[in-house]
Amino acid sequence: MSGEKGRITEITDLPGVGPSTAQKLVEAGFASVEAIAVATPQEIATATGISLPAAAKIVKAAREALDIRFKTAKELKEERLRVRKITTGSKNLDELLGGGVETNTITEFYGEYGTGKTQICHQLSVNVQLPEDKGGLNAKAVYIDTEGTFRWERIEQMAKGVGLDPDAAMEGIYWIRAVNSHHQMAIVDELFDLVKKDNIKLVIVDSLTSHFRAEFPGRENLAMRQQLLNKHLHQLMRLAEIHSIAVVVTNQVMARPDVFYGDPTQAVGGHVVAHAPGVRVYLKKSRGNRRIARVVDAPHLPEGETVFAITEWGIRDPE
Image: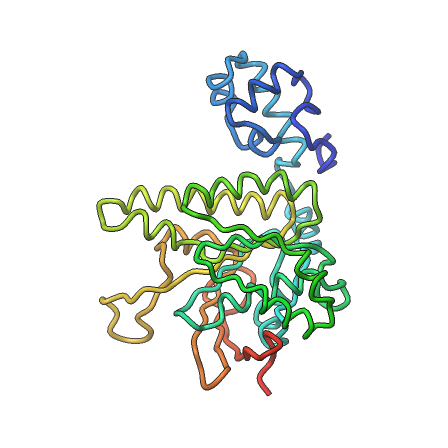
């Protein structure tokens, strides 16, 4: 079974999981192969009443189905070469990102209000629908909107700008408003199922931290907030890796009063967010419609910065 990724998609396909066991697993919150694969046999046995040896077999089968095993560095290299990219609409920004926004990872865009975070998200949700030779993946997008910033009018303009039919482009974006942090996490849980059934290759969370920040204010709630945020980021990382999709999150910045030299702003979420995304991009305003993007953290990209523009038709290179 090892290596034949994607053959088993339903929990009832796993050896040893009949209808009654499947029902127990679903009721205990283990409704997908992914959820079982990342659990311990003890967790499953305790939650469902299944014997420990039976739970161990089910977990082992789920992990094999998802190809979770030791791999050689060469296999990792081959997997890395299969990573696909979505164009941002700006050649400068694409080059900075090593060819565009990658699948199998989280890309975070953070910056102050008006630096272009949401504009980039809108553009990517249009561009992912383009054919591969035009920088797309011929696929659909999911847009999780936490602050009510999604605008269909902008999608219409951007679709026209890349030569797509505006109505077809809007059909290719699933939008949902997350009302609080728990709802935001529940949506991502549902996506594990939706992504399998539909041709979705991009998930956007705009913005990642706003609900967490509003619901857990003050130092006394910091530990709880960071714990939940950490869980949410791991959810998104699993979604990106297991289903080979691009996950893009936006984040706000806050001023650090202890910084006297250089830029005193940093992304909300502290170390938890800083260590999770695969690529972090800091956005700053420049003159007029120009914005500066800087790669702050990406293990495979050199640090650098570039300039892009926000035009009527979307994200482009400055003229």
